[in-house]
Image 1 (cartoon, rainbow, N blue to C red):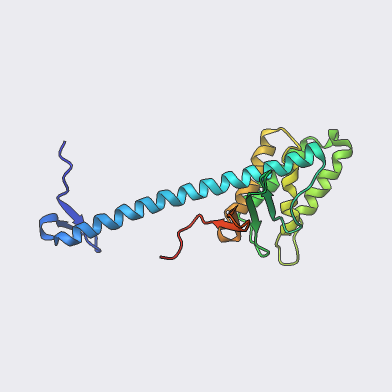
Image 2 (cartoon, rainbow, N blue to C red):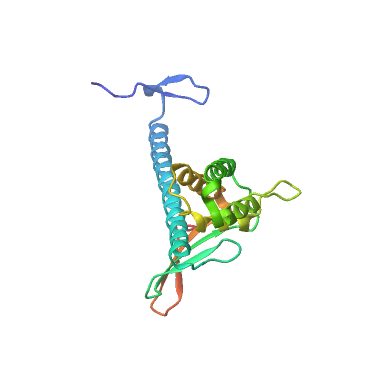
Length: 205
């Protein structure tokens, strides 16, 4: 099958025969498209990795709280984890001012559904219902309290229902999809013992 190009589309969408286009314009066209395609692929990988880090850290927080009654992280929802030898570090943070994505409403509906279904059997765990209600309360401007929303991460293991798992995923998405408002950072100690940041984006050339 012959896949040789016979034309390129110009800015107005017209198909221009390839032989009427300057050779360097064809090379430039292919160069730009090739790099942009690679950049898009790397961007998608970066987003997937960011989600993986957030989910892994949040699950670790939930496991500590559920099994050891231990809480980590500051009141602002930021978490710093180090390796056992303290030579590597992962930081997960959320900006002070954050507008949650629409996924936050999905999370609220799913969480309310699970709690309402199990209300009769919650017993002393009705405290969790109050915690959730407080977490999703809004201020006079209709905004959620970031610290309270972030605190819900430690309850990821509170229920094994599918709806609860979906709610926790929606909660992650609502936080992660705030783009620059969330970050993950990685560090490793150098020979002098200082922390060296491992960038996930290109440094200025």
